Length: 93
Image (cartoon, rainbow, N blue to C red; front, top):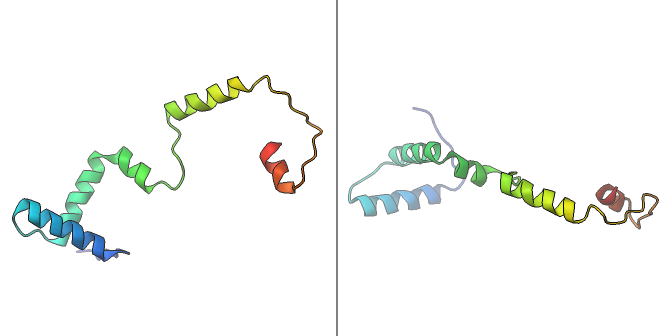
């Protein structure tokens, strides 16, 4: 059996306690983790969202970006503009 290190062991203890209460029987931490893995495999997209530190580009979000671009595509832009901070150049140029 492999050893699994968990940062917040209290969370698995709480989950295990809830499962014991709802199931009406004892459930081990190993079984609790196995169930979590099965649940994660069946709900992989939700798991990816939960694990991702970056927003996920969905077709809906892409459409919003395109619409925003189209809405402002005729906006005047001065390519010779100077900004107060060099960081502004990264954002606007």
